[in-house]
Image (tube, rainbow, N blue to C red; front, top):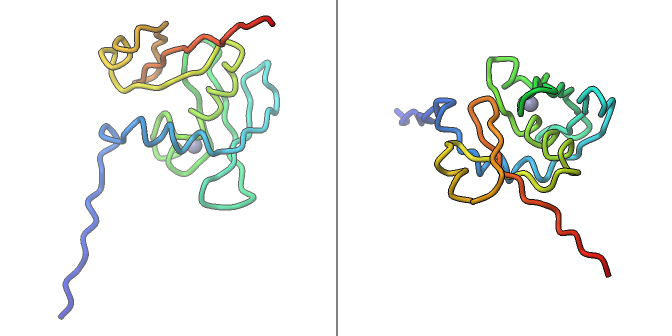
Length: 127
Ligand SMILES: [Zn+2]
């Protein structure tokens, strides 16, 4: 009899933010109605599939139509990708799991939904 391979299921709380962040960088973001925080974000695993992301205008959070988000997950990589895109004008966003992690960056810190972001100001160079 063969051994049954058991894949440990990671609880949502241990999903590593940095892994998500890296994944979110590779996703295509299509602005749908940026004024209202509405974006389409490409699926990483299914070519041609886009999920709808609705950003919360008052917080660093959003809703997504991907299966993971539909099952109660927050801050999926699609939401992170849309947030990065949405706040491009502000500077680069980096995401952190805890406030302590964020504070260590010595940058402006914004609180999200179970997540923190630091803002890297855009270099303003005038030549
Ligand atoms: Zn999603």
